[in-house]
Length: 510
Image (cartoon, rainbow, N blue to C red; front, side):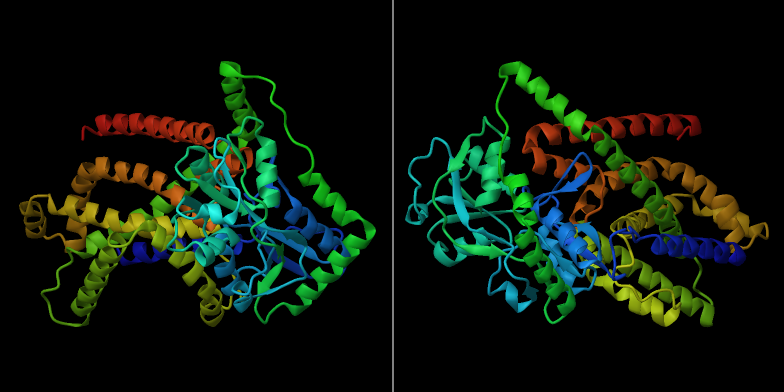
């Protein structure tokens, strides 16, 4: 039995090390002259600065960063991230820099170093087209205000309207604007180019610009304070070159001029809307679904090992004296604490803590113990997601296994032991086969729960179905239609899995 466990543990470690080694992309830039490569974060759902279209990274930030890299002769790897996770990732060393439409502010200068401004902008108030009462900053007093977390809009409201108006904070621009469009808020705040791009994309929009510029700021490329001075200098040099040769203006004009026009209305427009989403993002949704299922299957494999191991430990006798019994008691205690910790904290908190807190420490640990690598952020979001879901589901499966084993009549164990079987053989040959058969419905239900839980991995940039849906609606500004399609995909998959699992249960006569 011990040999089997050692073999199983070795297999798990081998697979984890393989995934760890493959966690990074190794995209080569044929234009690179210096041999240097930088990992640069962008907010890929912040048009016109950055977004995805036909699976291609586009936007002012993306094109400008690539153009700077080309002029300065270094490689760049674009790393998509939610805006709120960029500075934590920078502080933990997972990225070298970021270009994400970030306003240059004194508050941010405390933790990052900025380049020269690459875009002059300012925030405006967006209101419903029927609203004619908000035209200046003074008109915002006493109103319901929607702001995007961590942005200049939120800072403006905190500095000028705190305590004077009702403030609601949203995670992204589209959700914020949707609240204004639905009249759940009187005004929202965003950079002028973002607002103009958004309005141009939807000729039937119910929104309009309510005020002039409330602030005047510049956007800057940023690195962790006190680090990557060479990268910062290279960006400034490249930016200057692009301004002089006219390439900079071409990039900006590419995303700030023109717009769409309305052609249809009524039911035809609704049908075209859904058809357009499926045509433009259908393959992405399928790829995202594949990632979702892959993460669920692999993580549940490891979660089953964790759950079975902890559940099994709960029943190992500890009545004898000696080192072995003491170790079993320690492991049982740690197992119970692990279960309480996982069940007592939200999965979102676990995800953020692991990816932004634990992952940056792994290179130092691995360098000391295994001498594998010293590269920061060696675990990709997908591999991190597998570990997070496995640890989370493992705690719940441990309780399922404990309950399943406990449900077997004690006389079964006593009878097996009286026949001369050891505890381990009694468990593996008599108890577990019966217990697992009874636990199958609960285990399959945990699979479905974990599949839905993967949607929370969007916070660390895992390109699953939920993430692809987010990218889609933050690019096409059709939140309801896009998320309805995503919800339908989840529903169909889970419905099919439920029917499959029911057949398995019937076959086993559970």
